[in-house]
Image (cartoon, rainbow, N blue to C red; front, side, top):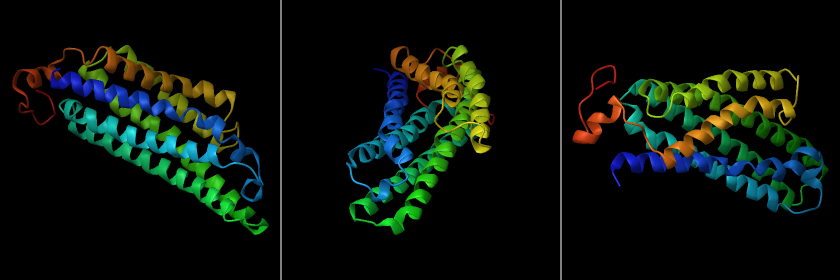
Length: 236
C-alpha cells in the first residue's frame, strides 16, 4: 500500500473514531440532571466510561491533524499548522472537562457530604462550558481550516468541505444561542444545527477510508519523488 493511501486510511479511521463519544449524551444524563449527584448513591461507571470515551476522542482528534499535516501542508503550511494547533486546543478542553467530571466522581466515592454540593455544581458547569468551547466552537474552526485545504487541493470531492463550510456558521450560531440562554446545550435545536458539521467529519472519514485522496497537483510530487520541494506559498 502506497504511503499516501496509508495516510488517508489512518486519517479516515481516526476521524471515525472521534464519533465514539456519542454515547456520552446518555452516559452523562444523571450527572447533568441530578443536582445532588455528588452526595447521592448509585454507580459511577457510566460517567467513568464516558470520560474514557472522551479521552479517546481527544487523542484521535490530534491524530487526524498529525496524519493529514504532511499532505495538506503542501497546499498551505500556515493553515495546516493552524489545524494542528486547533486540534490540540480542542483536545486540551476535552481533557479539562473530563478532569472536572472525574473529580466529581472522586469526591462522591470519598463520601463528600452536603458541603460538597457547591463544588459539584461548579465542576459540572466547568465541564459544560469546556464542552461548549472544545467540542462545539472549535470544531467549527477546524472545519474552516481543514475544509479550506481540502477544497483548494481537491484531495476529496469539493461537496464534502462545502458541507463543512455550511455547518461551521450554524454551529457557531448554536453556541451563541446556548451562551445567551436561548436554548439548552442539549436540545433539538443544538442537534439540528450541529448535524452538518457531524456529517462533514463523518463523510470525510468514510471517504478517506474507502477512496483515499483524489489525484491532485498537491500530492503529485509526493507520488513521483517522495518528498519534493515546495514553493513559498506551499504549492508545488
